[in-house]
Image (cartoon, rainbow, N blue to C red):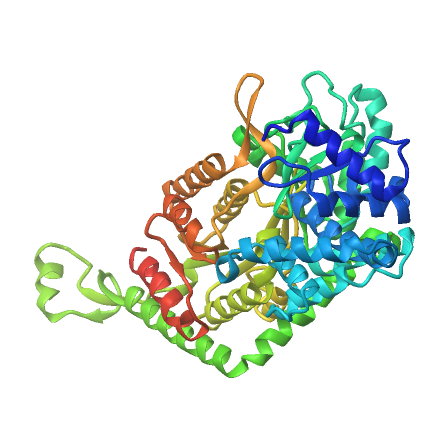
Length: 579
């Protein structure tokens, strides 16, 4: 969107008027969808300058940079700031309640209502409905987040930032990145790029979001260190720059370890695995294998401690969700177990073969006398269910944030059913962050008593599906079983910050067509290597074409818990019959 200089200057005047200070250039301005300076929001920005320490708020906004949900956190933070600044400024500015009511009515009039499912849109609409005195219907988690956003009117700058940090960390999987930003600033001296000075151009380096981007029910212009006015179109991170944000390799590895838990393998083994898997479209990636274990030293780190507390809280939610539907879940396990057991018995039923020992076959005795053929006996060979191994791979990216309890329950039901059938099962989740793909192992093949570890599932970060499936297929090939099955629980929506180099010095985002095609290629390669791959689809209607592109006919969608066993069972049965 082109913003005229007249409207930009008008927005600045509105901010100055409310701030009572004409000696600064605002770093952030808001415009409606026609490019006109938004009267109410720019007044609120001025109130924020008047009542809060803008430099500290700038520093907090910078901690969102590089996150998958940067725009989500920015918009939610502004909802909190709007509520707080309005509470402080309204008693001194009689026109402000009128402006707020007018804006709120426009928000409600232009909302999509029940069709809207984006968290930021849902909370923005609900927030302004509350401003009109309404009591909007919200899911419990969404209501909890909105209540947190609207609880800062009495707080000063430091307390408000602390409140939002706690809210985003506990409820939205956010981990503050001040430490990362400080290290990046130091490292920039050696890279000669202005990572924190994101409002200034550096040769060959771009920011990851445009300066003019969606804000509330209009657009916001982010300037200087807050967003960068130089980019009017969608800008991109190069692979090199995305890796640079990780600070040094050692510093990032330490950060990832503190965030996700102690590594499962030593550095030499990880290097060997990276050499095997991080090639082609994924050559800039790193790997971190873990069981999510934290020692006291790691928990002493504030971010690791916050992450562990958030993860433990999610564990309790996962278990509570399973217990709340205990009868249905147990019924699903029984039905799924019986379906798979029957398929295994049919497919792996015993067969009779000719042998030199066993039960004498009367109609072949003559062959022994006249043809010197010693295979005149019948011997029964029984099928072996241990000839099939199954890996279950759970997508643990932020897009799964609002269905974590469901995914944990579904993963547990499948694993428990397979275990009861006597099959070797391995279960792990995957996500990605700052160029690392993290594989979190919940249980291995011989750990038949550890299915409950699946309730440790929690979602955060991005998802590089192609690399995750490549790793899963590669690990499956190491098993001794003749038949191998990979079950993926995913929304078929790959998205990662590290780009794919499609030609020399030309990069494309790992999402949409690029990510989908890469994931489809890895699924195809796994099948060519003799591994059956199926998907339990957990996404939305608009992502169904992506699921079909990636998995072909080998995916199913769960519409209700009651149908889970039959739906998943039918899909697994088909794969067993094709062994």
